[in-house]
Image: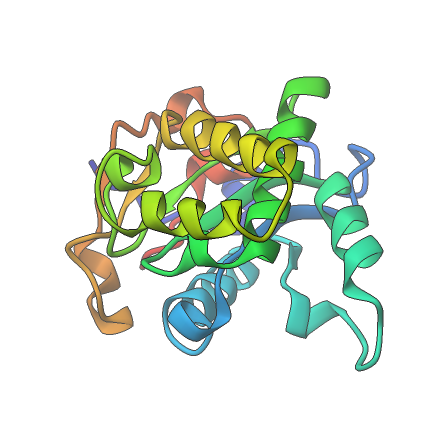
Length: 201
C-alpha cells in the first residue's frame, strides 16, 4: 500500500487543523533520541512539517532549562495524533514509556485522538513483550519503579502494539524511506490530514 502524493490544498477542505479543532499540535512525535533523533525521527519530522502539519518534538519546542515533564505532558494532551517510534531501545527509556502511557490515556479518555505506531527495527511482537528487548527492558524497570507504574507501561505497550501503524523494519536507513511497508494501515479510516499525507516521499 502506498500514498499518492497530494498538495496541501488537496486535504484542506473539510478537515480541521490543529488550531481550529482545539489542538495545539497535529502530531506529537515520541522517540528515543540515541536511536533515531539524527536519522529517522528527523526525517519524519521534516516530512510532516513539509506536508503542512504542526509537529511537537522536544528539541524543537522546549527552551533549554525547561522542566520537560509538565511541558511534554501538555504537548501530548494538546496533540491530535501521537506517533511513537518504536525502536530497539524505546522501552529502555522510562521517559518514553511515560509518554506512551500518557498517549494511551488520552486516546481512551478523549474521542478523536489517534495513536499511529511506527515499528522501526522491531516487530509488533517485540512491543507486545513476547520477543526481543522490550520484555527485558520491562524486567529491568521492575527493579527501579513501583509495580503500578511498570504495569501501566506494560499495558500501554501492549495496547498500542495492537493498533494499525507503519512497519519500518525493512528500512533501517532514512535514505530508504520510500521502501517502507505499511502494516495493516488503512488511510481511508484514519481521520484528518494524515489520510492524504505523503510523508514518505
